[in-house]
Length: 136
Image 1: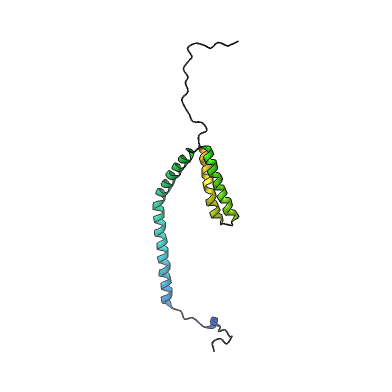
Image 2: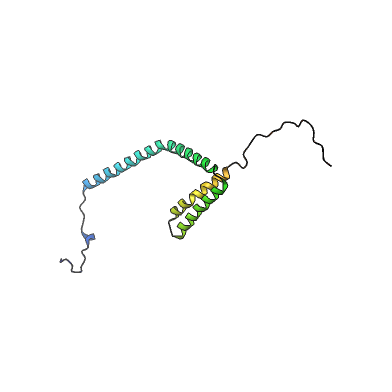
């Protein structure tokens, strides 16, 4: 058949000879992939406790640092973060990017809510030497 004649050759009618060596290669390839996935899962599980511990320590440090900031500064930073998220949303950014833009505002809000409302100080409870007289 001439090339470019406009006729298509029907390849579905052409039988494909069975090649056992090809099947064995595919099995070896699948077995290798499965063992690599298993080794990767083991490595991930071995590192997971350390990763969780490091994340917890980092989050605790970040929360403490944010709690040390004055309320007005936290509000301005949170408002800026929400503004970045809104701008990304209006620009049509993917949801994950918008969430990453708003995430600092959530962290600052959580730090502000977790902050103690009043610092606990010592109160002088020594009794008065003499009672007060009412004036008048």
